[in-house]
Image (tube, rainbow, N blue to C red; front, side, top):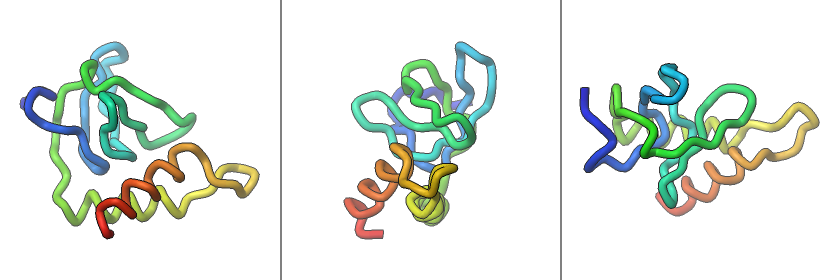
Length: 94
């Protein structure tokens, strides 16, 4: 199983989160050593605590960023995760 070393965690990747032992789907690209996991509640994680399980393709990454950017919170407003995904998608010209 590849480690985080040498791989920037990206949306769509599956990672093993060391502190919990859980495998998480990554919702946003790694920035400043952190990323947001998919699911609820919104979870900010440190990349250094994770091991890469399965890397997403470029298409899978963009598809998930689009999905997360379009998502809304329970009150209909944008969430931190959706705003982050939208910004990353825009930076990717996706």
